[in-house]
Length: 240
Image 1 (cartoon, helix red, strand yellow):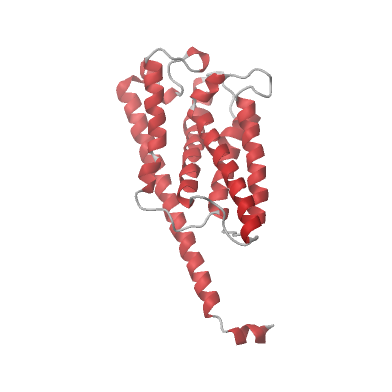
Image 2 (cartoon, rainbow, N blue to C red):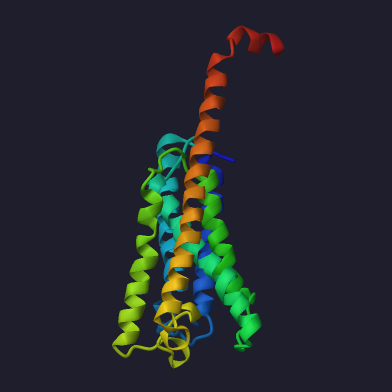
């Protein structure tokens, strides 16, 4: 599950940058010659931008370390921030799959999910960020309170969206709310609060699952290293 190989990491990260940029370019209308800034008011696109910028930083860091220290090893400015980015985009994927897709099918909103653009920004980018964290980032660095801190980014977006809409700003289609579960007019204040609390609990469960995975991979890595270090050189030679 872990691969401290900078050559493999570099190839993966360059491909990830291209796919992430493709998704953002498509959803923002840049590739169609009709760029729309309104898309950058959505958490989905902002979290995709976060992933793209972080992945570009990882590419630059990997190139530098590859030249300076060779192919073997990790390349990331911060394993903890890599985990935070993976979680931030996981929120995008889960909200899409748990809230937006069912809403589209049950409410007949006219929105068609699982298009190429949707898949790029809601599924492919999250998978790329998660795989990079799982495979090309050292583990055992996440702290017990980090999953709680990760929630600050989605909550900051909620605060921005409610203030922006409350001051008269509009999102796509002229709506005051970027996502259905935030629609106070339809759900009422109590309904929106329940949605946010429920999603917070569900996402924190996922966040602490990430912490558990991080610790499990680190433990496996330590056992493998200990086993390798305790193997007598003579026995290795004999087996050869």
